[in-house]
Length: 600
Image 1 (cartoon, rainbow, N blue to C red):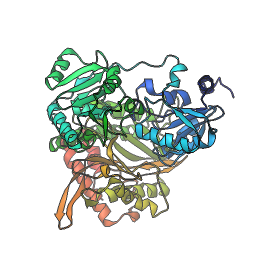
Image 2 (tube, helix red, strand yellow):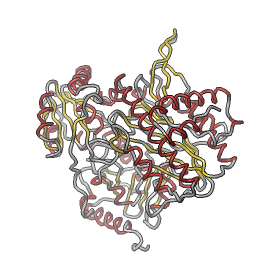
Image 3 (tube, rainbow, N blue to C red):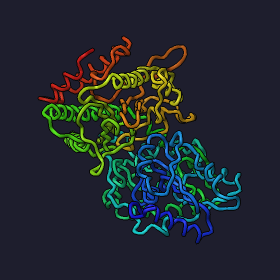
Image 4 (cartoon, rainbow, N blue to C red):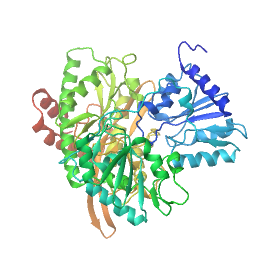
């Protein structure tokens, strides 16, 4: 293998040397950090460093003989390209939550061998499943070593960005009120302490924000709460004296980030510690002494922050207006530039759309990298154009744009597809089937408490009827000026649990898709808010308020596939978009808005 074209084979050999030195047979590297975050600081992007695969989700396994990367269908095309000449094989799995790597290890590690995984970055529940699967095969699991630390030169340090307060009016619920609500939940569970490690939960409880990872306004910290006080474990110097004094007034004291584990180890015998096994790492769990009772339940804050208050919902609606106005300005410019014959690329879309958002009120930053995929690139759900690899927007086809912003009053995420030149009948058919799926779910009504995965088939049904499927979930929860991906609800094929019950105030995406590798991709995405529907003798019902405000292109629609009620929904949506956005745009942007919201 020509290691001159890729550094990955050399890194794999370093792993194998380290395995041999420790008497190990295999190393597992998940895509996670000590907070089990989806979005990782550079220090914990070991999977990217080791494999060269830059997608946001995957698991890498290296043995003395083989190496494999496990990724779901969102990343297959990307992974095949990025793993070329690396010595790592791609194992295609059905979903990001699949555990195929456990079976793979059981078949590829000899009985009596040992597998290493860093206990600091693997979740407690995931570690339990891994250990059980390996024990069945006679394989041991070692979790007390960070093997990458021995072979990763110049490993990035911890991020040092400052932490700041998310303030009223946008922080509509006070820090003290949130702490009181968490303590009430602790009391119901019989817990004397509660350890919170997930960074979005910490940020929500404390009304603090940061910039330790790109696109999500979070910071690295742990939080230990008892009946009267709370300790925030955060990097030195990240919180200034004035903010520290403000936190102290709310009963929050600061401690060094590295002292979280010793604090758990020091809990007195007889304590009852509330932890979420899906949201705490194995290493932290192992710090807890035998004399401390463990209470395992979902973090109360995870449920609370998923239900936005009425005041927060109003700020989100305002953020959607700002976001929609930015998109009107961008698309008006974009279509005019195409008409003038200017040379545009996917990078042009990224730069110009981001610049338009940056001009809007209360804008803080993007909520994820802009995905602008023309034709074949649009068939990769998590594609991102780079200076070295991007497409010019010329000829005929479909341009998919998935983008979003972080505003002080909310987080946005929207996908639209636009026709470039002449659009074929096959493209229109695919576009219309996806649109029908978006409308089908958007227009539904369902009993309060319905488990969110039960709604997934409503968006897929128009595609299934034509023998078509897509590999990602239909919808993810969205935070309030927090992570663009937020649980616990998920409209997907995930196995449902009680915490996925749909409740008023939840914000979720609706984004069915259709992807033809090497040709084009279609995805139409809006964010929706769970609002009260009718109450009948059968109970309370919920329905969706569509929050996203941007025209859905009608030039790509095959009218013969649309029912009258679907056209009525689309025309009603466009009437709302026009009414809400028209006062905020002018000139070319207004003219574009009026043209693209004409009723069918």
